[in-house]
Image 1 (tube, rainbow, N blue to C red):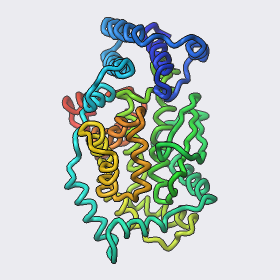
Image 2: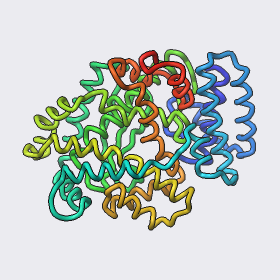
Image 3: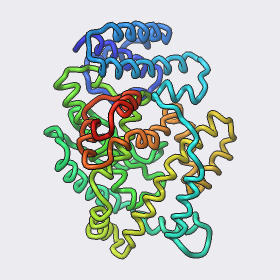
Image 4: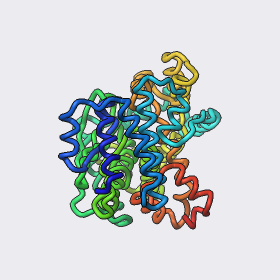
Length: 405
């Protein structure tokens, strides 16, 4: 372990002492973590000094420019977290910029309205669109005993397709678990050693149409695949200690969520997805007669609503709109029930996740130019193995055509 990597791990683990959950995963030397956990929390002022000294060391360190750029942005994000914990007032937009290396902007509401119009045509009938959509989604709800069988079948299929495209580390493994009372819908807990625990939150009804996008995002070829490949390549093979930890508020998250939100398209085209749903997954859920093509088109239209959460976060934390008004915004533009919108508000009010919400839609949009055309699998493979910040991706896109990248 080189000195800079070692200091990076120390800083991250010490910061987690003050902000539990900041370290999302750690699989480095156990004695390092145990020693830090056993000691009294290092004062925030001292951690601020550690950040500045580490940034100086990175600037003059003997390393390639890509690693230097990655480390610099990651450590600058930690500096911003320390500022917030120390009581500094940081504008919400600036907070997002410092944490994630992206600038949040309000998504155009006309895109939401166009999605509503498309869904309205797909679901003709009486009642409001949200009522018709709720009735359609009600049909897709899984009984508790169906959830794990449906998601495990999806896991097997997405893993098979991922293995055909990308090289998974030997011995990688993943388990699925059902949980309650969480601010998120699903979560990948990366355990190290190429293993993950994926939890599915059952606070709200779990629908069969969520199985493929959720498992692709959290598992194959999304978060689990990325974390396992990067552990093998960056930490085990290249001995870069900074990749033995994953941070929840850092630029790497934008790339990771962009990978997750782009994962399904790497495995299925529409005809392949329709065949899997029609012939295998939906019959297992007792929905053999469902109009699969209609559901696929509804899902694609709903993707445009991914930006509603980011708008809601800006309205709440930047514009100062009252929480009840923000919830109604989510209900209106996100076509969510009051219960679903209330669950979204839990995430937007959580200090760990309030600014994280931008990583999904903006991450996918950032990576989209790389993931078009015949070179998309090779570009996706690079994203799975190479550490990149949003700035580095933007530089690549500015310097090269997507084909060259």
